[in-house]
Length: 112
Image (cartoon, rainbow, N blue to C red; front, side):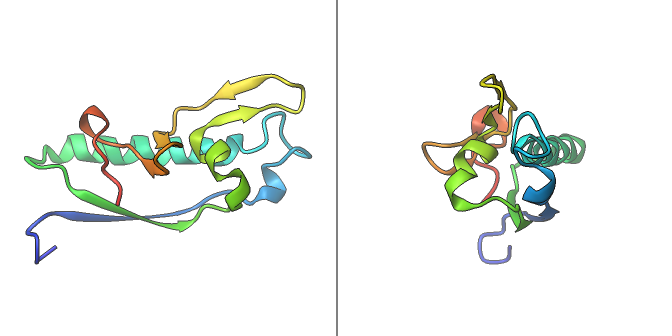
């Protein structure tokens, strides 16, 4: 990014559709999309470690998360209720209270 002289990474994602990640297909509706978000986070963190960057770059994450607004905190936050009443937690790095992804050293926001 020229104006700030900061490194900017751009990442794209297209998450599973709700027709394949819902109560009719999964015990934990949203688990596929939460898992995909966790994989994206893990991949970006691995690339960051490989780059041995002196400063943490900003990351612009773009894409179709296939997640309706009414279920975004639950799905992106990885705290899912099963159709059988059980709960599962998938570590996605999404901060539900702040509505942002906290990916980076010491939970520093990495994604814009």
